[in-house]
Length: 418
Image (cartoon, rainbow, N blue to C red; front, side, top):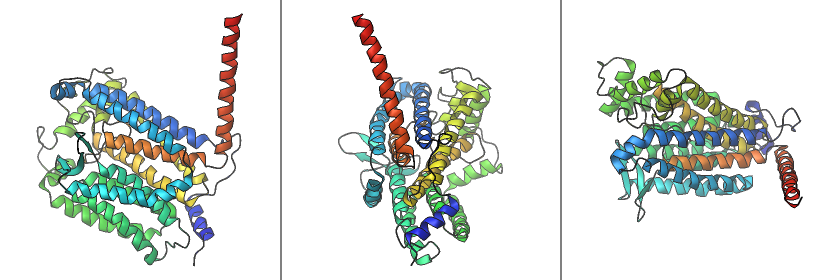
């Protein structure tokens, strides 16, 4: 029977063991990278939602700030959850793994009841009775699945070179992906697959499993594309096989590229987008990166890419340094979710991937996505606080801030009395 020490040695093959922080390699660096990049992306997202949604909100709601106020409300709801999650001990998340997964699966099953709501061919939302508000259960399933994978794979005695240990884990993941696919949400299902692959790769699953999974996945994707004519048309347009149809299949992609091209290096100015005037569908959601490029130019898009790069570096650094296999695996799952979905969204907007209907994490409008992503970042911050040397470094930083505030307060008080 493989011991937990052997499991940790397998993890160290993919992620070298943690070491004590030094002055040149501060223990709290992962914490600051994740928190700083994540919160800056949220700020940029709120500003861009305000800019990109005014025309649509005015036309549909009669209030140019309707979508912005809704998004701000979700951000204000998600931030306290982030802070709360960041203060919880790591062991709590192990205990919450099964409840989180089962709860998200139960919510996803409600999609197929009378509470289910669909949009654009996807059946992926449920209506909250009495609140006239919908939620997307699959967004919270990402958190539940990430925690569950971390807990299951890091358990004592689990051997990833034995198919009898791997099969139950893959079966659980397949249930989650299958439920999302039943709602016809191929984009979210792809993100769940990336999440699972990232977790199992860091855990040390033999590479031949990934080869077999990729082969089966390609066959499944082809079958799902062929089954829906709308998907076939999108793929044919993407590959350049079908005739150009600027008002049909290629409409959204073309206008997204035109928006990016119009922005140039410095952009046309915040709020001055032309594409948001009902030319570009989902301007404040799936294609918000195009509006950002139009208004803030190449410099704005590079800033967003830099922040996602910083976030990715912070998460990878934590995977490399943290001694707990549960933390490593769960962090890898969340990293593949957030960073992978970001790359897919940006790839769609710049035209190197077919349209999939995925929002840009932390930037696009969307209540469930924003709350779930902020909660996931809170969990990552809790993990970063338990990194070797992080707690001491954060304690020193907090003490320094308190001393500085005390000095400033004392001077102000002394100045008043003097």
